[in-house]
Amino acid sequence: FKRSALPLHVDFTHTPPSIETEEKAEAEGKSVVEAGMIGSVTMLPATFSSGTLGWKATKHLAIELTDPETGKKTKVNVQVQINALVKGSKPEAGGKDAEDDEEAEEAAAAEAA
Image (cartoon, rainbow, N blue to C red; front, top):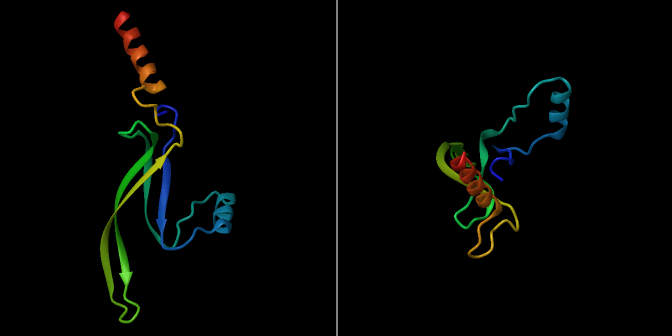
């Protein structure tokens, strides 16, 4: 799984993405920068402690809050953790998953050579 799964990319914004803007920019060969962009994170393929496969990421962001009454701006630091799990990928109790077996076979072949 880790060898074949590509990273996933997540953007954090204050505004929803505009499909029309993305399509226009793509047609013109430009990239789109969202007005409310806060940050982004790349989720990498992972095997969780339970044996489940998926992607995970952790990101620290500074988010600016505005008091609607006074207009005073305050920044708060936030830690975002994202886990995306592949349904049904947890190995059965006591069993190893196919990736573990494959890695063991490769190690044994390398030792024999």
